[in-house]
Image (tube, rainbow, N blue to C red; front, side, top):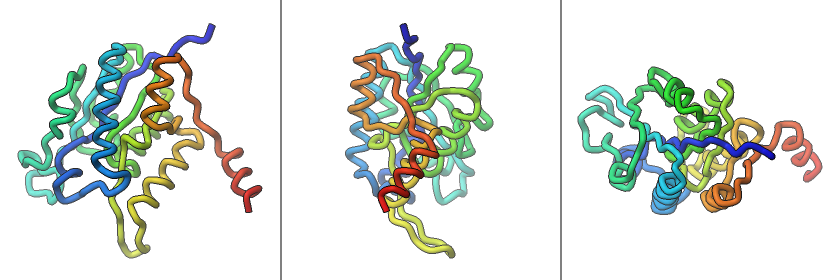
Length: 208
């Protein structure tokens, strides 16, 4: 019989900065992702899956996530829900400079289910590090989100960034699924699987 995953839900940086501050999530719709984050937290709590809430802080004079600012505070949908551990971080990955890895090992967690912001930055960094350090990883793509970017290399919409990073993560770093698919897996005991680089590439070639 296949052993069931021992999950922890990692809720990354669900702070006012992304909702009403200077770095607003544009895709998926913020109300959709916030609702799915709340749904995942409630389901995890009901299933006795530990919930780890992550909060990002920058220097007090930073334009985003300034320590002590209202924008850096957790959104009420997360702040008011039960959690098992709270982590404060200053880097993109939730593992860097925190006790996350130690806490997960102490609780014998083997699978991380990731929600929160931003898809291409803190989610991606945390997912890749978790994968490299030996955890199975799941990313709930409709409980995450991105803003648009423009710099000297060009511009990318929030939808483009979110979509491409989600596709890339699903090639082996994480099983990228919807919140509803994740909830179904909790009920059924299904082990969610990522795709792989080779097959993802071969399909793309064949579709030309």
